[in-house]
Image (cartoon, rainbow, N blue to C red; front, side, top):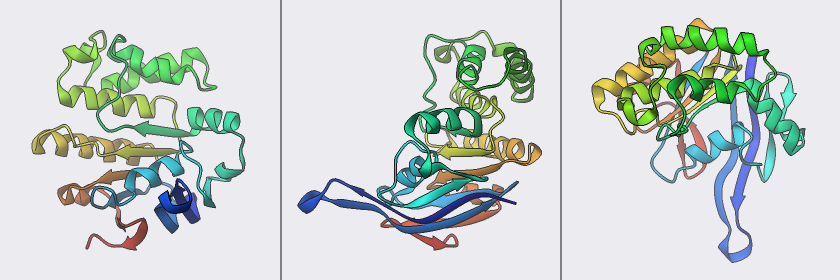
Length: 226
């Protein structure tokens, strides 16, 4: 089943003489239980595409459909609710709430979804255990290592049981060994839960843990790692 369809998406920032085309007629399909790597240099449009797919940015042209929902046809309020329930984000640089514990960083995001509180609590406990964070659940982000913080970020993305996981440069703040561990864990969680995932990365070493690779260059999508 198709989890994601990006159809002829163009994104332009600004207008007139200052206009910058960040995406150019991008087309992409992703199946359930598929983990895709999106490769490209800085400024190629990787993060812009991820933001458009997740509804954080609106495309100038084209459409994005997640499952059977045309995201680009929803109102801003409807998109926010849709993201809370159906899309999980792992942001670059962890992006954890600094004054919340590891456990609270998971539950605070899930609390804006439609899931019952008891279900959120159970899922949080399960994820903390699976991610090796059960004994660190009461620690603040500053008390955690880089690898532990990234695992909290992964748990936060998964806790609302979304259909699509979007990951932006998960290894950027980690050394090679930790980065590999995190990506392997991410791939395992996506596969074991039957989800679809896209990982933006510049690190070719991480490609082996994904099912397929798409390159982006100057806003245009190209097949293969190149």
